[in-house]
Length: 338
Image: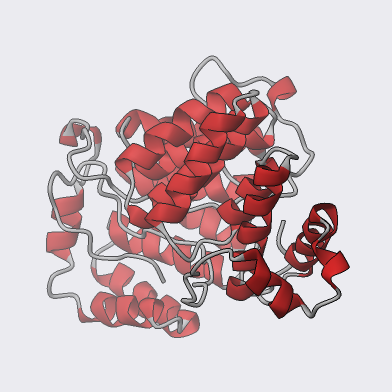
């Protein structure tokens, strides 16, 4: 795990499928790699459930809010990170359209941002009680419970969310992360590979990187290294697959040379990474490069490691998808990352 403060480690969540949940499956040990959780996002062309499963469909909920000024103002405040203001506006919107699932979901998300977890849970549970199955509420409850180590409760809600949309890219991603965390890499690889095919570019890069980790844990180093390289190709400024790739290379002259290259790129992309600097120095020592008696930059020049992508690293952020699109058909995604 990199020590670079610009790449925060976020909480870990996942989902389990029916018949796979037992108390023995919930290992409380944490991975040292800094797994990342992303909230739900609908993949184009994904299957959708029967709209009759909900008392109010997403399209109906959205239509009911088209002229609701408090909701529109509240959503803008939410997107701007002004959560106290958003909470007040959503409360006003709820007074005009009681039991609207989109309003209830936003109320839960806003409460979660304000660290009011009990309130968030109440909003999402009320949404399910009044509206029936609603993918966003199940996913958000699952993530909330996972953050509280209520893993069986989290699994129950993630399972229901996946039942609403079996092709949900981020559901597969979270499922894979949980399997990876609980040291079940074969199952993790299956879901992470699917997430990489269904997800957006950013999600594809992350899913492919963690799929590499899963493949490495199953004793497939060549496939793992191919996955790490693909993740870098998809997102050229992605640091963690460079670290994983470097660490996975064989201990021979060619492997050490390539390892030095990847650590060098990490140092440029994440200059505060003490781990990358230490590993790079150790690799140079193993290569005998430190015997040159030259400054680090001169040694790197003699190694002729090639051009680097010098674009700055984008910080990883948790992504909330406020609106449930599990029964919205081809409706446009109105809210993305914050």
